[in-house]
Length: 451
Image (tube, rainbow, N blue to C red; front, side, top):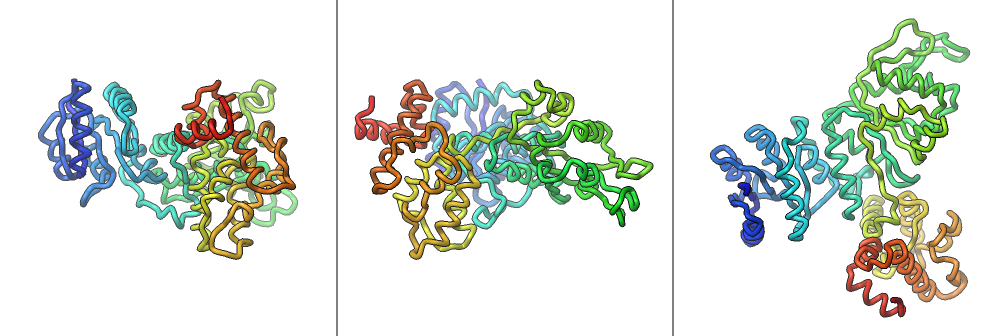
């Protein structure tokens, strides 16, 4: 049995949560605001705290900041009905064991509480938190409420508190730079520079000068000294995108920099100390490249102290409409999606991931004469043919020259059949993969005569 503190201003929710936790065999203490909750921590022994994000006066994040001082090692689970990328990341950065959305399912609560109570102590976190950003106007915001995306946000929060190197993996267009920026923004280095380098866009012979800098006269054309990206990022974060495209010779020099924390500009006699946090990213399979001798194994280990895998958009269809609406707000277009257009977006396979989605939405917003974007305005079939038809997308059986609604129905049926195949007939898992409620999927199975 454990003593659990609930800090939430919703009396009815507190009563229900307390009753459930009591059923699990725990002793419950309830506080309805941050001040009362912190007072309980000062005066009573507590094994676990469940804290609402939105509280009157000082919020749940403020409770967590002070709880770390009053009860070091106390595991906290943040609860919220209004999950966003920033509050999820910030809660995890401050040491939250988990971040759950209301209403909380009984099984999910039991699992989170059991794991939290088994946790010996939380990882030390940075002292001060960042102010929340307005997602509606933040071009670097991470948007998504799916389980897959929330897992990414939690991992970002856990990694942001340290200076460990991070390797971000994912297909092209999934938003790997946004993850790097979120890591920087929520770290103790947030006041320092964020410098991004696309390794695939720089010729191999210029890479050393680009990263490490050079002195005047080091080579033909070096008319002045150049600091290089490492020194530009001193005190902050250096994001190395497409690290898998770096030459083996440059990889060896990178390894030395990571080991020694100093760079030697081209033509210079002495190295220069640098204080930089490295975040690297690639769409390539580095493990396979290591096996083939195309990427240094020691550098791979150095880069992936923490790894974050970004899921492709097709694996989180529930986030598609959220992202589309975010792009419409971001552009200030003053336009909305019709229900049919939203449904059409969810049925698309998105081979170009979030980058493709943004392109589709911006084009539709510019070309649509009215204030509501309809399926025909999206021009998704032409977009798919331009990108390249992905295997198993369902387009093979669609009449691209016929009416729109039958084509959408054929796509919908193909996606459902594919989801059931990939999930071995598990309808609940297929529904989650498609971003549907189970009852919605059951109705679709009946509509299409599928078993």
